[in-house]
Length: 50
Image (cartoon, rainbow, N blue to C red; front, side):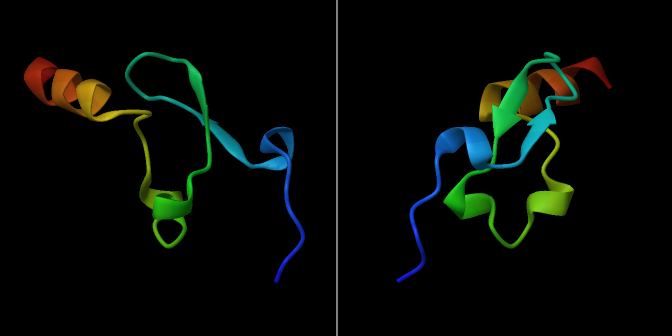
């Protein structure tokens, strides 16, 4: 089993919609390079603006 990581050690990105930082999540493991928004709400808001 791999050693535990602290949340502060995880990679972070800035949300393209709200500008807030968000941390890596296990469910984004395979698509981390493609993740742009911190939440479903930000993704919906971005689609509305287009």
